[in-house]
Image (cartoon, rainbow, N blue to C red; front, side):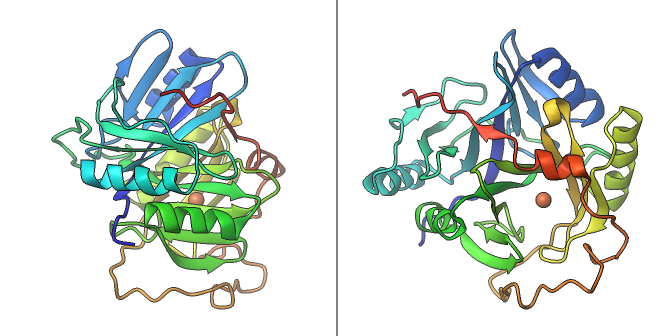
Length: 302
Ligand SMILES: [Fe+2]
């Protein structure tokens, strides 16, 4: 498929306590607020994207409003719309975005009820220099899927992802950039979000971030360690409302010469859960929350 998304731009969450979440994501997680009102707040990383996280005040529990991908231009967005609507998936109309950063795009829902958006021409920032201990961008979202093959096929056929590696229950999906993966699909009982990973500049920032999280009352739930597929360093936490979060760094950079492998290749040495062999198993809390964050079920609105 020649039409491919360029990356994972942002995630939008609904949270019951907007004030507490704003304080966490700026002071502890170290994003920068770019726009805020009484009912929503928008945060950038050090990369160019206008915002990588949006928080919306909501009366229920935490939920995902949508995961937004970046497209190159209007022709690309129109082609995505035509393909996704043409296969019978629910889509909003193509439109200019009235939200912060603007842009042109649409929202859609996949066969398991996940909410996505695709947008181009967003008013992104001119600066993108790394800043110590501040996230650049979202490295990946890990989507829990009842039907892994069907979910992979949706992302491959409609958004131009390619299946770059498979390890245990995990499928790693690569799009039109040099990161090994931007989406991970995990076999699960419900189509929830397994976790959201934010990319820090280096390993030291992940370790310092884990210390900062501990100091703020958010202990490490899994890690620190180094994944095998994707080669990235990781530390996992239960954030506000137990939103499952990851700090990561050193994501493998790939080109077209990368050779994908299956689960038979990505085998763990006995008793190990990461390359270094240092991380203990997931905490009980992590096992509980990694299948907890649902997508919003509110109707799509044009
Ligand atoms: Fe991850």
